[in-house]
Length: 405
Image (tube, rainbow, N blue to C red):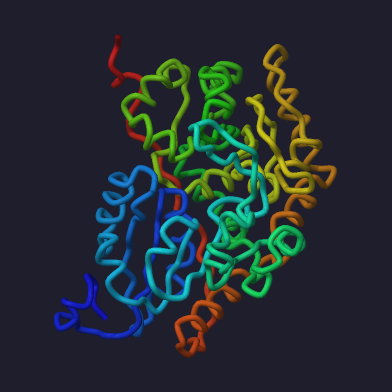
């Protein structure tokens, strides 16, 4: 197998099956990173990466992949050879490469509403990742296997795209399984975030877009940091990777300057969010899947106001929105955090967890078996291990080092 196409095959030291990781954006790459370790040590495989031509923030994604020491192919190189397996975190680019495609969701499952971009450039009608427009081309199912997190998604697929049902695999949610696996490392995660004994940690998170929590209220992070006594609370912001990629680290920190001056800390761009969620005593967030993951893992969640966002009834995000408290910015924050803890204590988290995955703890085993089946290789006898998330990293940039305009 050649890292850079068939013409370079004679340079290879080990030969075998090429595993192409197709990463259209940073969020998809993060989800695919959960799958790569399941086969990453096998001498019979060589992983290579490519960013589809219609990917988002392609230079940023490419730089990140190269910075980790991975082999990055151009799409021309990726098209050149057939691959033993293609791991895809989106439907983008899967028609441009050859090889069996394993399509996995990059956030909270495929069966949830997402705004569809219309030809005019404005948001069109909401669709799900299971819509026939995404899964079919000329009547043919595009991915070889479509990974679902829950039996509910299989029911949805049966209704809206029955042609794809034979290609579906209900595997559970490996991202959520890794979050749960990290619970034993909570103290280590809290130390990494500088949470001293006796203090509580509030993680504030926002997805991207003008209707997100941060887009709806640019002072979100500042307001939370100012609302809680610094001697008792540490407030850490977790921003969606698209925010960093689109606007740049320096600009985002400029926007957060008042929060930083009030004691806000910020997770470094592209750091794994799961350690921070595990470490948190409370999480405040909008409709991002991170919020539902946190609730399902047992963290009390206080929702932050955001713009209009369609939610598919019965999904984790919709149930969380219906049964968790919404932050009233005109009232003291601390009692509202306690109300979020009360909701969690009444079983909301267990309900959300049951909606996130119908195969809890099984995703690694199921996905590895499927990956080796598509590769046409025998599966190793050793168990499929599920590693906890690495410790979260904070930005070293502080309020004192920010430019003053």
